[in-house]
Image 1 (cartoon, one colour):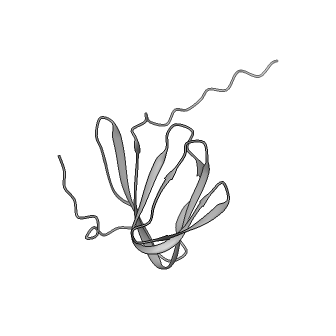
Image 2: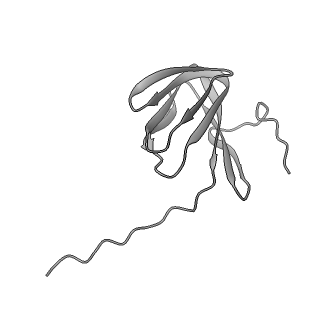
Amino acid sequence: MEIVDLTALDGRGPAWGTASEELNATLLVWRAGEGQPEHVNQQCDVAILALAGSGTLAVDRSEHPLAAGSFAIVPRGASRSVAAGPDGLRCLTVHRRRGGLQIARLPASPS
């Protein structure tokens, strides 16, 4: 078991992370205007907890304000992005553990 003070960790972007057999957790720290570009997680729901600062969470292009203490669960299959506000944003994401990225092999093109 690990106990971490997420408010005391320095860093930028993915500043800290841990995983158990079932869960992944990542601390994300962004300066004003930085953030996570739009993407889709097809494998699992993602919980997002804003710890400090402010920002905007966009889910399927619908924007939602984030402030310290804000909590959201983004359903799998939804597009999401996060942008830090003028005072930056520190948030924790937690989701069910998933396997590593796989490189797909494309079928051979017909001759």
